[in-house]
Amino acid sequence: MQKARIKLACIDIDKLNQTCSYIKEISDKTGVPMRGPIPLPTKKLKVTTRKGPCGNGKATWDRFEMRVHKRLIDLGLDERALRLVMRVPIPEGLNIEIEMVDV
Image 1 (cartoon, helix red, strand yellow):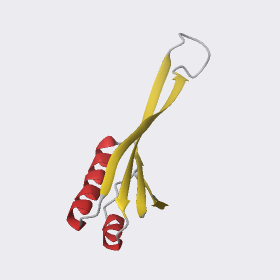
Image 2 (cartoon, one colour):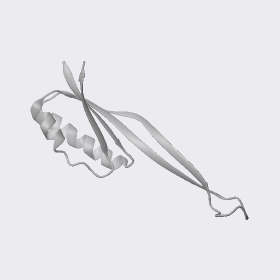
Image 3 (cartoon, rainbow, N blue to C red):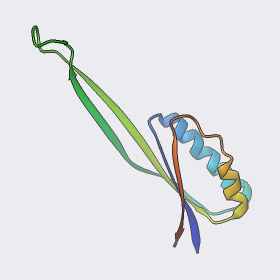
């Protein structure tokens, strides 16, 4: 049996959860079996920079962090359900990958 594997990644967790709920509603309406959303490990990107523009003065540092949240959804292969998933409103900054997988 084939399934559609949907990978979602975003730095804003609210946008990510909202899109997951849209896909879950589509699964409930069409009756297609769904597995997920499965939370994947959050990637933390850290950057440390020095506040002072020159080498003089006190050594103070700024620490910045960006978190990339990820979810995985397995959706049963149904043409109608996949069309509805393709029409889901995608917020800015959300990355979606859809691939067909044999299970």
